Image (tube, rainbow, N blue to C red):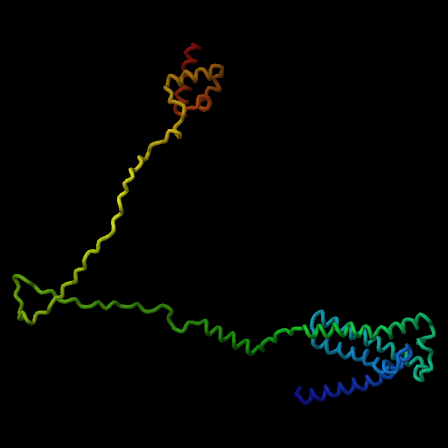
Amino acid sequence: MNRLAKTLLVAALVGVVGMAFRVSWNALRDIANAVGADATAATLYPFVVDGLMALALVATLVLAGRDRTFALRVLGTYTGASLVLNYVHGLVPDLHGRTVDWGQLADWDPANWALVLLATSLPVGSIYFGSDLVAKVLHHRPAPIEQPTANAEESAETIRNRSKADLPVSTPEPITANPLPLPRAVAVGFLKSTLPLKQLPAIESPAVRPIEPRPLAAESSRPRRATGRVPEAARPSRPKRTPDQLLAEAREATAGWPDAKLTGEGIRREVHTSPANARVLRDTLRAERGLKAA
């Protein structure tokens, strides 16, 4: 749709809304007079009700999500309230000539109380809901507009082209070494050169670089401690026992043991010796017990 068609559509909508407001304005003004409003208040009363409906409609077009749902509820509530008041204005002919009693909108008292409450609460609700809708519209941040599909395809194609390698071959060609030709050595001694001495190529002797002195580590005057010696505190306090002493301790410890309990592990734990010594003591004690039994 071009701009001219959109402009005509908006102009037609504004015209229809303006005429509908004029029709509703007459009914709402008479209702305001019936509930005790003066001439100025009765004139402004339609702007309070129908004006909030227009504000809620604009907020519905701007907001999104929960805020848009709230604006739709306000629009629906005030539209229903305006419809009820216009309906009552059409049912009560006395409202047209302002001959109705003050605060009397229906013959049935509960219905009259509900209508009076509705008519008097709409201005207060306009203040509350209108302020809330304006605050939501001012603090609303529109979502970013997505790019068209054509631009997205072009950007994707550009990224794919950039990711490709510029060279057809990824590995470079090997670099061949180009050694410098060395000067030919001149034979000295038995072979004679065919060239005169003035035409012989001069051989440059390599420059001799002096040897720089390197710093030596300073010798320490402190004597080094002998390694491998165990300190006295780490040495065991129990002196080393001889085989006879071990055998005597084993005899004393295993005097009341049965033959089944006389094992190398049991002797090792009781006498606190090595497994090899425990096995020797076991064999000796078993031999002694065999001699005694014989």
